[in-house]
Amino acid sequence: MTDASTGKVVVNRVMSLDGFIAGPGHTMDWIFEHMTSATFPEVMAATGAMLIGRGTYEVGKRMSDENTDYDGGAQFVLTHRPPDEPDPNVTFLTCDIEEAVATARRAVGDKNLEILGADVAAQCLQRGLVDEILVYVLPVLLGDGVRFAPPGLDRIDLEPFSNVQSGGVTMLRFHVRK
Image 1 (cartoon, rainbow, N blue to C red):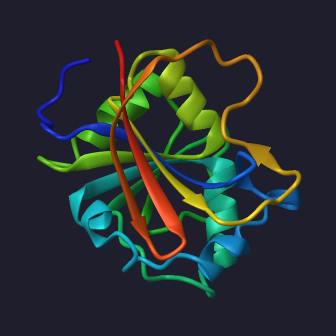
Image 2: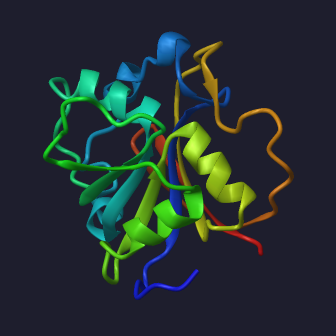
Image 3: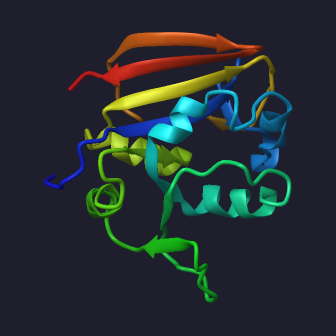
């Protein structure tokens, strides 16, 4: 993949202690009980664009009235079916994952491309497109929901390089071994 970006491709996840990135029914309101954009402001400052799956985009739209303070730059949504009514703040992509990452990386400059959404992140990991995984572990057990990694994801070796705690939130960072 060739592009002008010097930033990294980072899978960014908030996770319950029992390994869920969303609760039953894809609920994510539990996140805001523990985190705000001020929890780790350096992550938002380092992010130039976000590549999001359609499901995560829809959940985010439903939650936008509750929490709108995260600005991760340009938003790209990978989908098979763009919405009938376009969102002026989003670029909808219907290409393959490699092209979607390359398109979004062109928008980040020297910042990072943040990957959100279980399916999009798994596709990026499977194809070796991810440089780093950033996980915020929250002090909650959800018991059910959307797992951190979907079934069928092959083994991915990681190298831990940072862990930081802010209140009850622990941020873990890993380089993806290629």
